[in-house]
Image 1: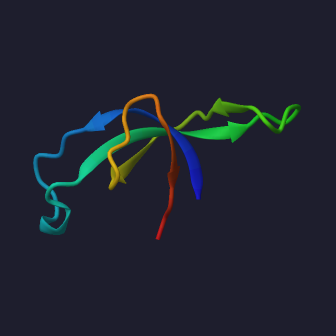
Image 2: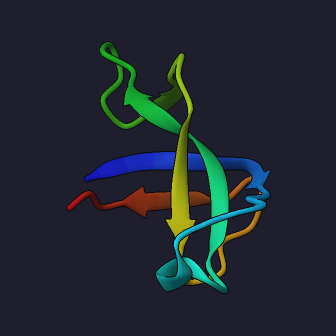
Length: 66
């Protein structure tokens, strides 16, 4: 599982028919700040995730891979 912050959305001109109606989000994983384990900082990379619940820009989400 990955904790990440939503940065925006992606538009796909073509996608698998099973993904019709799905929204794609650009998310930036959050990294635990070593000196203070209760604080997070943005990571250096981004990911594209499928949104099944309707998250919005700026929200923190939990990403599950499978």
